[in-house]
Image (tube, rainbow over all chains, first blue to last red; front, top):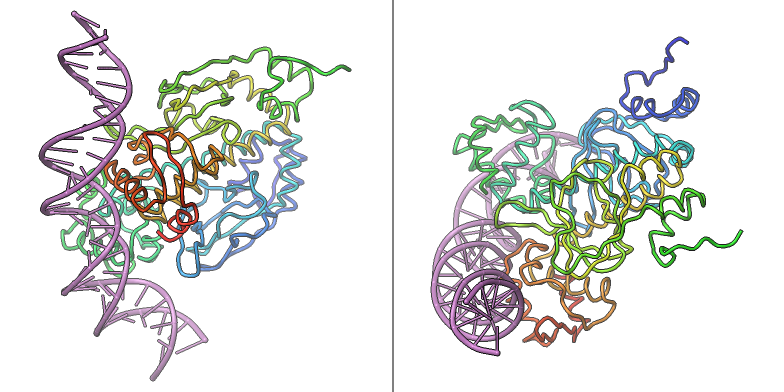
Length: 229
Length: 229
DNA sequence: CGCGGCTTTGATGTTCATCAAGTAAAGTGG
DNA sequence: CCACTTTACTTGATGAACATCAAAGCCGCG
């Protein structure tokens, strides 16, 4: 009974499947996986397309975007490996509700949705663990939207800066992966006001800005702003 | 092989279970169900409480509420029978993320969550149909929040009036089940501005107001406002 | 090297929250 | 059942927060 080895060994998807599937089923899934690299800026899924795959972000950073009309978009959330399975709506809808776009070079691992569903029907434990993950992803989106809604401009910007520092990069210095316009589309304000607020934070020596690089200089004050505005 | 009869026969929960459970399992679930009537205004679940039941709204109308601090709340959504299973987060979290409060007299039917989970583990098809329903509920909340976010005051009020007329009451005349304050908490604006906007609509003869009763007099115009503001 | 998209700043006006003050309605205790 | 308290509703006046418009510099990319 030697350990099963495949190229997915280091993949997080592995644990998702492995904990609830028998070895045979796991190997069969594993063999059919498709892996693809999406360069920064590329479209991974387009809003309205039929959902054919169960997909998982192995590495990189993506955004979920809703196209309102020709020129306006709303960003629903940013997604990194682990915290998100890129499987929003896969059970409830036949088409992608949102576009998925790579913000950094991103590796996507995908399986045929039909096969995953088939496997879920045959294995309730597996189905339940999938439901749990989808559930959690949706919960996080809703919670973040509520958190943003209760804040005003300054608080929203502070919130998103802390989000990238704490959740995404785990560092107070990081390269902003999104444009000012994208921040605006995420927090529901205008690009100009995002810029103005960042400049204000810079003048108040709360952050340092160097092109895309941002350093949080006074985290305490930023937290205060995030809580009170 | 006579038809199985129980008091749940007219219940929508029935189809949810029945389509994917064998007769024995269904009967066993059905026998253990707990049914309770919550009068208008009463608390059904409190934010932070442990989630112990899988619950379903049989009749009535409820609101999901997030308590921010002593005096401020956010309304996440309104839920009616069928479109909502009051089971947000049941798989992802151990505690209720939001309070659930009855806006009208509401009947709740509940089962022990552990037993439902057990059954899901034994029956993948059932698990998948549950996942689908939770998924759809979350999707709707996110979509509504995005729809509200992209509108300004007038558009938001128009949107919610049309929501109650089209989705909830299927009539252009209805008794508003929520206070002005609750509308404000739902759309993220102040009570005063909700009232002002309703008055404005009344003066423009778009709606008629008589206490809690609202009649949509010029639906076309209301739709226009909903789309353009 | 020039075009288009992103960034930045300023000036202006709109939208909205806040404060205040009063009326109506609904619940509470004697 | 009535006086009383509280909560919901309503309107106006004011200022703050934010969007919009305009203009210019910057940067990457074909």
